[in-house]
Image 1 (cartoon, rainbow, N blue to C red):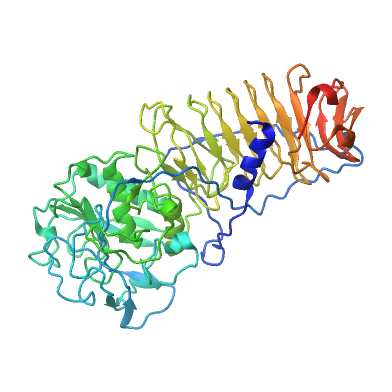
Image 2: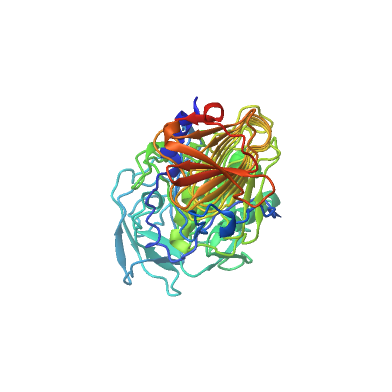
Length: 590
């Protein structure tokens, strides 16, 4: 594929804006992203070159870029659909919503719910708490399938429940019931049941072979709650299960052969927030990251906090309440609340995913204190993972330095990257297994031994390809691109005020200052090519040679003269410390 075709292929996907419309619906002005990896401090060497006006062509003015307005962009990788899980019920103890509710409000849910074990479903949900019905949520066929339900609730005396208005953002609303409800306040207690609470009728499925969480399951629940705390304004506090117990309570029972777990949505009914694992289902005893058991735990806690399924499915038959995600997004690449597995990985999600974070933050706000230092995100070379990064500040880096498989790292918020194998110790590469949450800014990317693709965002990025034949896309901002060893292609994509530093490293490198549609760095922007080697390297520009000129001069103040590349009267690039530059020999005209 030619460089020009690569530019055309990436331009639309990488740099088209998407209107996320979240500013008006989220209380928190700052957004970030989430990860479960421990981060080590990372400090980049200061590679920003001198920008003194005395060292710049006289007709150019370098203007520092203002990076305050972070662009929200998304790229999507090819999807395949794989199924993994099921559906589940709702419940409510202490909830809130964006619109005030009266002492007795009727919510027309228009949703069918699964039948749970032997629960006698003989009345409308005015007397029965809502339950999700997935395999991870324990739903069976029900008298209520396809029934338009009137759910009557009252605001609890302690202000526990609040109805939430829809946001108008499709991927958030697809995860929220109508109307959505959330727990009041920012502190939610939780406990581990020691016996079946007395508010469960004698013939409920939860009374079949009850057992408390074992130590592995309890620690997994704490881990999962910590993940939700890191992304949201919530704080979870463990309490004794004696008496009323926590708002969220965990237990296990033999709830049937067709479900792995179930939970109740936020609800004024005492069952609201309860999470149950099926103790006859073997995967629930494995709670490692990437296991179905831990995904189930995160999924069920999502229900207990107010999230629904994003698709029109229900384990017990019938359908779920809309709105729904588009089919290509209804999978665990985007949300742990989906029945459908990640299309590009053989392991399950380690964290709440891209849309889960947005929806939870719409309900509870964002945690702007999570990972505010200079953090580096990296993974073991043979470790398969699926996660979304929530990072609230600092100068941060995604690193594939220890990876042997080719990596794609996209630093744009709301985008997906591909790092590591699709399964542990595998030889096939994962596809779209890492997301960056909306409004998160990650500044730097480091490639590994493979032929990597590194994609910058709207701020100043430092992209380092290292080994392999790499493609580096600078995006907006004044970027520093270093190809490293191998035959690399460096795309500055410079705007009118950008100053990019391009270093090819060893090998045959191509420095792209234009494509078939655009001349980059028009106006006050330009690229500094630091290590051009006329024997191996090329410079690509748009148009024909008679539109350009080369001028030698001491543009950057070092002992050796430089060569400036002019498009008309506009300097778009400088080849540092070299005057051995030829249109005929060194340039590609796109």
